[in-house]
Every structure is written in structure tokens, then in C-alpha cells.
Image (cartoon, rainbow, N blue to C red; front, side):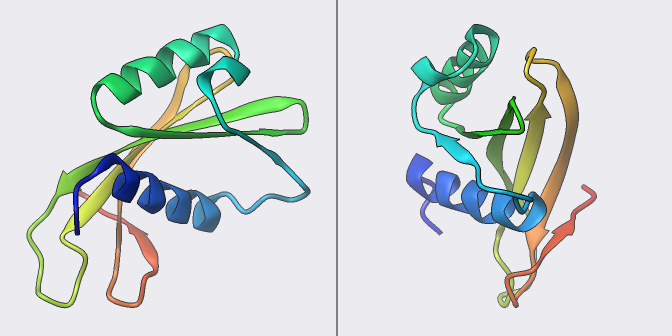
Length: 113
């Protein structure tokens, strides 16, 4: 897999779609200028590190998830990358972080390093 920011963003979008299916219609946040200032700062730091972020508005809250590639050793039939995911609240506080990977069938599972 190419380790470009686009490839990382697509992997993050795939993860978020699987892990956080919206309960109702959401509005995707397209640019940092649409984020609350504290999240815009986190988004800027994320981009400087060549990592990806994804945000959406749902139920009056901004959902913000950042991600980065993590290399892992595995067999030839699996994705050689895992995704470290950081979930922040509206105020920029880190709520959770974990490393996830996909199996050969494309299903996500928690990967313990």
C-alpha cells in the first residue's frame, strides 16, 4: 500500500465508516476552518505530521478522529499496515486511542502491539 496521506485518509474513512456508523444524517467537515478552534489546532498538528483527520457534525457535536499508519509484520494475505486512531471530543480532549488492523476479508479488529 502506498503510504501517501491520501491512502491514509481513505483507510481512516473506511475505519470510521465501520466503527462509527451514523445513527442519522451527518455533515462531513471538509476544512479546518469549519472546526472549533481547538480542533482546528489539532487538525493542523495532525497534517504537519503527515497524518490524517476526519470530522463530522452530529447531534450538535463535532466528532473528530485522527489516524496514522503503524507498520506491522504479518503474512502475505493481510494488510501490512495498522491504523492508530485517536478520538477527540469537542473541546480537543483525547477520549480514546487504539490501534486497529484489517484482516484479509477487510474486517477491522483491535490490534495489540
